[in-house]
Image 1 (tube, rainbow, N blue to C red):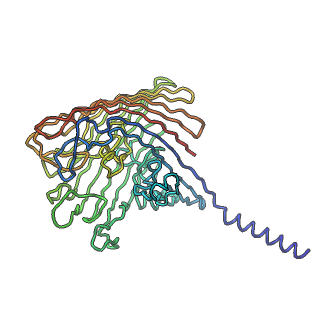
Image 2: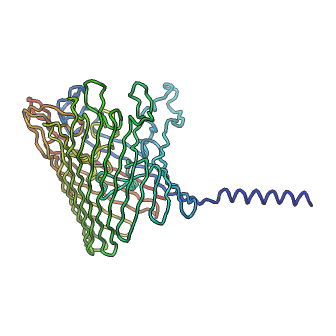
Length: 494
């Protein structure tokens, strides 16, 4: 009996110990999604175009290949939230593949292992799939402030420049390694922050190839957000002030310079000021945001001269709820471009999560056939655009339609230097360029299969504007081909 009692006591003590060790509550949320897309005429022309990377002529023609894109992707992320005690919570985000997911069938762009024809039907799991720690920070609750320390995302306003990637299909996020503290008094709050900006494999281009503790490769940002949020009046007014600086050898910012000493961008120090306001009156909601950027921008051109930046973006949106089923909206914006004629850089690039259409500005079309950066890494720049949209909601269905038109602010002019905004270089133009990006019509729907699953589809048609016919060739302009296509996606949120 004594032995049995002793064994029972040991078992009970062990069970209690395990329960004690596992007492921390963990809340798991996340997203998994899979999609497929079929696009036609992604080259935007039917003309044969052969591009030599070193010959930066300014043409808008894309290297011909298969101009009908057919691709499938997935997105996946987990967001653990661990309550340590009443004053501290540990939060994070884990994803796989490139940033948040990858192309279906390829966990790595370099996944080319094979054993000849005998391996045709033999498949092994890809072992190069990256596990990304996009966020991991502790959230501390104090009497005076809510403090976050670690790797965290940031969002401001409409997400033009700073976007935390909260949408299930956002493939990027504004990520900081640092600290912020939100201090609130009534409807007012002030949130100062200090952060380092991550740069992949930073320092690999240096002679030593090491990450230096001296800070010679750092990118730093310091700033604050002041906010007035009156929920009773449905009014939000805020302003962001931040100063970002980088050392001369940091690889986060590429340089086009091809002269001595070593392809370095040089030191940069840019100040960004962003006011934002949002107000709702019953069924009408109006939002507006501006981004003003100035400061030292380093060697952005191929002349080894330090440049200044003076760039702006402005955005406004009005949305009206006609009734419980219908809402209509109007979005307009202006994003500055660079005319290329001075050493002052004047272009603004919006966050790649910020989209206005399903095709226009949505993809890096050069990457579809030429490789290089992600086809999703495409930013709105050098444009004035208008978007009219409407949504119809019925039970589990949401039907969506939109009309978008856009024009370029800066175009090539004969006899002057101009700037290629998609491929980021300056060139001398011999021809004039039209300013029309064209117009686009989008249709789509979301169907809520159940509380956690949404099935979506879209079809879009982009009437390509004459801006893309520019070839900088006296022989003539490129003929244009309109882009159209659609897609289907399934999204699981939990």
